[in-house]
Length: 221
Image (cartoon, rainbow, N blue to C red; front, top):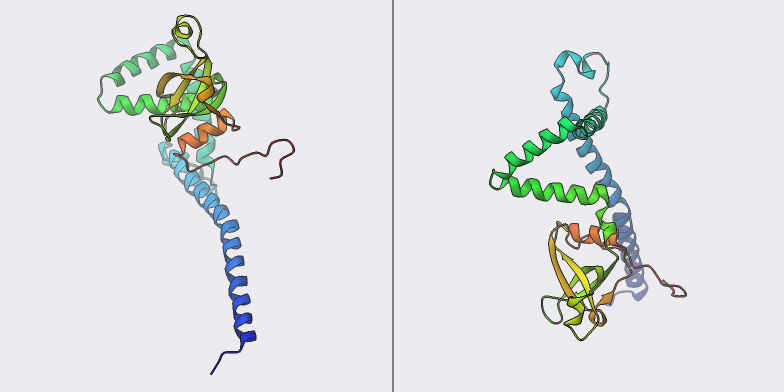
Protein backbone atom coordinates (compact mmCIF):
# COMPACT_ATOMS: atom_id res chain seq x y z
CA UNK A 1 0.00 0.00 0.00
CA UNK A 2 1.52 3.29 -1.11
CA UNK A 3 1.71 6.31 1.17
CA UNK A 4 -0.26 9.39 0.21
CA UNK A 5 2.22 11.85 -1.43
CA UNK A 6 0.35 14.85 0.00
CA UNK A 7 0.55 13.36 3.49
CA UNK A 8 4.28 12.75 3.10
CA UNK A 9 4.74 16.30 1.81
CA UNK A 10 2.82 17.68 4.81
CA UNK A 11 4.97 15.72 7.24
CA UNK A 12 8.08 16.97 5.42
CA UNK A 13 6.96 20.60 5.75
CA UNK A 14 6.18 20.13 9.45
CA UNK A 15 9.56 18.52 10.03
CA UNK A 16 11.37 21.34 8.23
CA UNK A 17 9.31 23.94 10.12
CA UNK A 18 10.20 22.38 13.47
CA UNK A 19 13.85 21.94 12.55
CA UNK A 20 14.37 25.47 11.21
CA UNK A 21 12.58 27.20 14.08
CA UNK A 22 14.12 24.97 16.73
CA UNK A 23 17.62 25.84 15.49
CA UNK A 24 16.73 29.55 15.20
CA UNK A 25 15.37 29.58 18.75
CA UNK A 26 18.42 27.72 20.00
CA UNK A 27 20.80 30.18 18.32
CA UNK A 28 18.89 33.12 19.78
CA UNK A 29 18.28 31.93 23.35
CA UNK A 30 21.48 30.00 24.08
CA UNK A 31 23.82 33.05 24.06
CA UNK A 32 21.33 34.97 26.22
CA UNK A 33 21.01 32.14 28.73
CA UNK A 34 24.78 31.58 28.77
CA UNK A 35 25.43 35.30 29.31
CA UNK A 36 23.02 35.52 32.26
CA UNK A 37 24.40 32.28 33.72
CA UNK A 38 28.00 33.50 33.52
CA UNK A 39 27.05 36.90 34.95
CA UNK A 40 25.23 35.26 37.83
CA UNK A 41 28.15 32.90 38.41
CA UNK A 42 30.65 35.77 38.27
CA UNK A 43 28.64 38.02 40.59
CA UNK A 44 28.16 35.12 43.02
CA UNK A 45 31.90 34.44 42.97
CA UNK A 46 32.77 38.11 43.46
CA UNK A 47 30.27 38.32 46.34
CA UNK A 48 32.53 35.88 48.20
CA UNK A 49 34.74 38.92 48.78
CA UNK A 50 32.23 39.93 51.47
CA UNK A 51 33.52 37.02 53.55
CA UNK A 52 36.57 39.12 54.43
CA UNK A 53 34.24 41.46 56.34
CA UNK A 54 33.54 40.47 59.97
CA UNK A 55 30.17 38.72 60.32
CA UNK A 56 28.52 41.47 62.37
CA UNK A 57 29.40 44.08 59.71
CA UNK A 58 28.20 42.14 56.68
CA UNK A 59 25.14 43.50 54.83
CA UNK A 60 22.98 40.44 55.60
CA UNK A 61 23.39 41.17 59.33
CA UNK A 62 21.32 44.36 59.12
CA UNK A 63 19.42 44.02 55.83
CA UNK A 64 16.20 41.94 55.65
CA UNK A 65 17.19 40.51 52.26
CA UNK A 66 20.41 39.65 50.39
CA UNK A 67 21.67 42.18 47.84
CA UNK A 68 23.56 40.49 44.97
CA UNK A 69 26.38 42.52 43.53
CA UNK A 70 27.62 44.13 46.74
CA UNK A 71 30.81 42.14 46.35
CA UNK A 72 31.38 43.88 43.01
CA UNK A 73 31.09 47.27 44.69
CA UNK A 74 33.57 46.17 47.37
CA UNK A 75 35.91 44.89 44.64
CA UNK A 76 35.78 48.20 42.78
CA UNK A 77 36.55 50.10 45.99
CA UNK A 78 39.45 47.74 46.76
CA UNK A 79 40.82 48.25 43.22
CA UNK A 80 40.57 52.04 43.53
CA UNK A 81 42.31 52.14 46.91
CA UNK A 82 44.95 49.67 45.66
CA UNK A 83 45.56 51.87 42.62
CA UNK A 84 45.99 54.95 44.80
CA UNK A 85 48.38 53.03 47.06
CA UNK A 86 50.65 51.56 44.34
CA UNK A 87 50.96 54.90 42.55
CA UNK A 88 52.69 56.64 45.47
CA UNK A 89 56.36 56.30 46.42
CA UNK A 90 55.89 53.80 49.25
CA UNK A 91 53.52 51.65 47.18
CA UNK A 92 55.92 51.48 44.23
CA UNK A 93 58.74 50.40 46.54
CA UNK A 94 56.62 47.65 48.11
CA UNK A 95 55.47 46.43 44.67
CA UNK A 96 59.10 46.31 43.53
CA UNK A 97 60.07 44.21 46.58
CA UNK A 98 57.05 41.94 46.04
CA UNK A 99 57.96 41.30 42.39
CA UNK A 100 61.57 40.52 43.32
CA UNK A 101 60.29 37.91 45.78
CA UNK A 102 57.98 36.44 43.12
CA UNK A 103 60.93 36.14 40.70
CA UNK A 104 62.58 33.61 43.03
CA UNK A 105 59.54 31.31 43.17
CA UNK A 106 59.57 28.72 40.34
CA UNK A 107 56.37 28.31 38.26
CA UNK A 108 54.67 31.09 40.23
CA UNK A 109 56.93 33.69 38.61
CA UNK A 110 55.97 32.48 35.11
CA UNK A 111 52.24 32.60 35.86
CA UNK A 112 52.52 35.99 37.56
CA UNK A 113 54.49 37.52 34.67
CA UNK A 114 52.15 36.14 31.99
CA UNK A 115 49.00 37.38 33.78
CA UNK A 116 50.56 40.77 34.45
CA UNK A 117 51.57 41.21 30.81
CA UNK A 118 48.11 40.19 29.61
CA UNK A 119 46.31 42.58 31.98
CA UNK A 120 48.74 45.35 31.08
CA UNK A 121 48.01 44.81 27.37
CA UNK A 122 44.24 45.00 27.91
CA UNK A 123 44.25 47.89 30.40
CA UNK A 124 46.86 50.14 28.79
CA UNK A 125 45.86 49.47 25.19
CA UNK A 126 49.38 48.59 24.10
CA UNK A 127 47.78 47.07 20.98
CA UNK A 128 47.80 50.61 19.58
CA UNK A 129 51.57 50.36 19.21
CA UNK A 130 50.96 48.12 16.19
CA UNK A 131 50.15 49.75 12.87
CA UNK A 132 48.17 47.01 11.07
CA UNK A 133 47.50 43.29 10.94
CA UNK A 134 48.85 41.01 8.20
CA UNK A 135 49.17 37.33 7.38
CA UNK A 136 52.57 35.82 6.66
CA UNK A 137 53.56 32.33 5.56
CA UNK A 138 55.12 30.98 8.73
CA UNK A 139 56.65 28.66 9.87
CA UNK A 140 56.56 27.11 6.40
CA UNK A 141 54.83 27.44 3.03
CA UNK A 142 51.01 27.22 3.02
CA UNK A 143 50.83 27.65 6.80
CA UNK A 144 49.91 31.17 7.87
CA UNK A 145 50.48 33.18 11.03
CA UNK A 146 48.95 36.50 12.01
CA UNK A 147 51.48 39.28 12.56
CA UNK A 148 51.54 42.97 13.43
CA UNK A 149 53.44 45.48 11.33
CA UNK A 150 55.64 47.55 13.64
CA UNK A 151 57.53 49.53 11.03
CA UNK A 152 59.66 49.53 7.89
CA UNK A 153 63.18 48.11 7.90
CA UNK A 154 65.74 50.89 7.54
CA UNK A 155 69.49 51.35 7.67
CA UNK A 156 71.75 48.33 7.55
CA UNK A 157 68.83 45.91 7.97
CA UNK A 158 67.36 47.14 4.68
CA UNK A 159 70.66 47.61 2.87
CA UNK A 160 71.64 43.96 3.32
CA UNK A 161 68.49 42.75 1.54
CA UNK A 162 67.42 43.20 -2.08
CA UNK A 163 63.69 43.69 -1.42
CA UNK A 164 61.64 46.12 0.63
CA UNK A 165 61.36 44.59 4.08
CA UNK A 166 59.01 45.38 6.93
CA UNK A 167 59.28 44.66 10.64
CA UNK A 168 56.57 42.40 12.04
CA UNK A 169 55.81 41.02 15.47
CA UNK A 170 54.38 37.49 15.56
CA UNK A 171 52.40 37.00 18.80
CA UNK A 172 51.65 33.78 20.64
CA UNK A 173 48.32 32.41 21.89
CA UNK A 174 46.67 33.00 24.33
CA UNK A 175 49.11 35.68 25.50
CA UNK A 176 49.80 38.05 22.58
CA UNK A 177 52.29 40.05 24.65
CA UNK A 178 54.87 37.31 24.08
CA UNK A 179 56.16 36.50 20.61
CA UNK A 180 59.08 37.19 18.32
CA UNK A 181 60.34 39.70 15.77
CA UNK A 182 60.70 38.95 12.06
CA UNK A 183 61.67 40.87 8.94
CA UNK A 184 59.62 39.85 5.91
CA UNK A 185 59.30 41.13 2.31
CA UNK A 186 56.35 43.52 2.21
CA UNK A 187 55.01 42.04 -1.05
CA UNK A 188 54.73 38.61 0.59
CA UNK A 189 52.38 39.77 3.33
CA UNK A 190 48.59 39.60 3.08
CA UNK A 191 46.90 42.70 4.58
CA UNK A 192 43.86 42.06 6.80
CA UNK A 193 40.86 44.36 7.28
CA UNK A 194 40.40 43.55 10.97
CA UNK A 195 41.54 46.04 13.59
CA UNK A 196 44.37 45.32 16.00
CA UNK A 197 41.86 45.11 18.87
CA UNK A 198 39.78 42.53 16.98
CA UNK A 199 42.87 40.46 16.26
CA UNK A 200 43.75 40.46 19.97
CA UNK A 201 40.36 38.88 20.75
CA UNK A 202 41.02 36.26 18.08
CA UNK A 203 44.43 35.43 19.53
CA UNK A 204 43.41 35.36 23.19
CA UNK A 205 40.47 33.06 22.42
CA UNK A 206 42.62 30.70 20.37
CA UNK A 207 40.51 31.33 17.26
CA UNK A 208 37.13 30.83 18.98
CA UNK A 209 36.13 34.51 18.73
CA UNK A 210 36.48 35.43 15.05
CA UNK A 211 35.70 39.04 14.02
CA UNK A 212 33.03 39.34 11.35
CA UNK A 213 34.37 40.51 8.02
CA UNK A 214 33.28 44.06 7.19
CA UNK A 215 32.14 44.61 3.58
CA UNK A 216 34.19 47.08 1.61
CA UNK A 217 32.73 50.15 -0.12
CA UNK A 218 30.31 49.07 -2.82
CA UNK A 219 30.47 45.42 -1.75
CA UNK A 220 27.22 43.67 -0.84
CA UNK A 221 27.41 41.73 2.40
